[in-house]
Image (tube, rainbow, N blue to C red; front, side):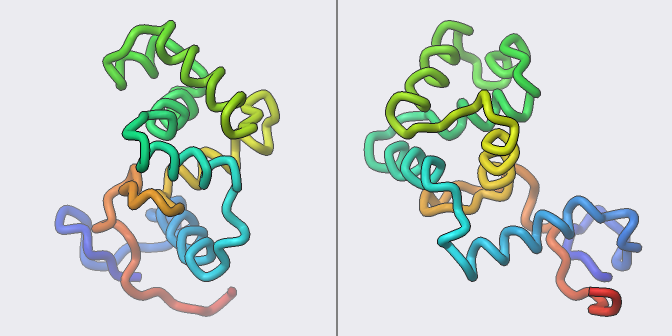
Amino acid sequence: MTTTDPEAPPVAALTDVHARVLLAHLADELTRRPRLRHPAIEAMLEHDRTHHTHYGDSVAAWLDAVGNFTEATGRLTIHQNTLKYRLRRSRELFGLDLDDPDTRLSSWLQLRIGAGNSGRSPSWPAATRPVTEARAGE
């Protein structure tokens, strides 16, 4: 497998970049089949884009921090009450049930890869996406 990451070796074993490859495949699948995208995430990202709000970034930071408010608010440079408000409003406005583990996972994946109609960049650099890979074993 080759990568376009300038700091990575030009060739990498799948075991070295497995998570990146998996996320790249998921991103490709969500691009090909947009109906698989989480509707609440789509609505939230559209709202953020049109109303200049930050629900998507707030949910992503909270999920990235595995629910740790101190860490998430530090990343966002906002008060904990602001984050709690945004999470509560994400449920009220978009029906996003972050108490459900499957919803948390699917939401985090979609936010992490930047899939959706917001034009939001992925949390991991595009330069690390695989350019080519062997199809054996798929």
